[in-house]
Length: 308
Image (tube, rainbow, N blue to C red; front, side, top):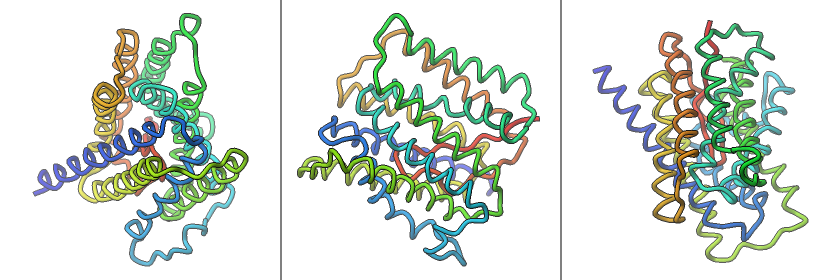
């Protein structure tokens, strides 16, 4: 019975990350016709449709602005806005596979910040995973051998913002409601992106509206599916499913955008995913609790606890 329940959770997680991949492809199809700030704003606004499904018994809509730690809530607020802008910028300027490569550096950021800010002890395997992950990024970027773009910087900030959110979740623990953290992220993206889009705002055309609806609704769908997945299986089992996004990225990139992956990017993908899987493998004995959702925008990533 338990194995069947876990299988349902894993399948739901795969569906969730497939939905996120469709969301990312949708925002990439906008192809810069509106600014990343504007895309992220409307994506977050439409993504609020997931909110009613995230409310647990006893939760109220006003809980999105209630916090047991206002300073960390505000940090999550800011990190989400930066992460949303960075992720949309990455998908606008890079191939989907390359964007995911850099965003998937998130577990390494979590490990480093856990040591610095949470004073956790991290073992040799986690540090090895960090080194492998950064090596993969260097292989992908090839500094000095290719021109780097704003998209690469956006992907790094996208992963860094997501990592900050995960560390905040771990810092506040069970004292904070999941809907409060979701509210901080959603309101942060709406506020920061809304302000940033004002100088260059232009009303989306019909095609852009369709892509924005797809971007926001599939992200909301992914959020709800991921929440349902966590009710059936523990995070240790769900963790590896997030890397299925890379398979979708390669498929969508080839079929929709005509992208081709060269050997260095392929090697980087293997190194970065390997780094993440090493991290995930260290969580199987920890029973890590997965938050309902930490990202209302294009990325939602399972949290990684530090090891002892």
